[in-house]
Length: 161
Image (cartoon, rainbow, N blue to C red; front, top):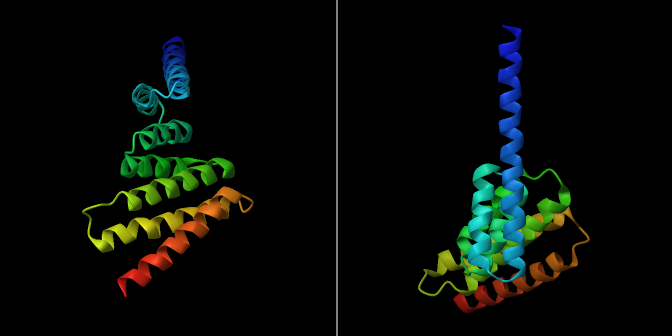
């Protein structure tokens, strides 16, 4: 009886370890494709990594790959998941920063959307940059992007009046 229990526990642990190794392998392969600017291939591998191990890193990398393909709304979702699940402040900050960039690009490419929906992208970008700064107050890129987004919001509001 004790041998069966030990065997079951061992098999369960090995399954978990093998799954994590497979996810890591997909992340590495995705990284190589990303470096070669083959973003669709990187996306494919990062999706496999997310399916194996829904980690903040897997989601962050997948967000970057789809962002590079101008799938900004999808990128936001992956950065959001990464930020929510990350325990490291630096990872959270980077995920929120990139989420702000994705919102800002969604705003800039929101042709055909209603004005309130387009403006929501800009508000979400501002909120994302603020979140990035809460997790890393020294992040000069987020400060710069926040300033630019706020200036764009002011300009947008003046045009609406």
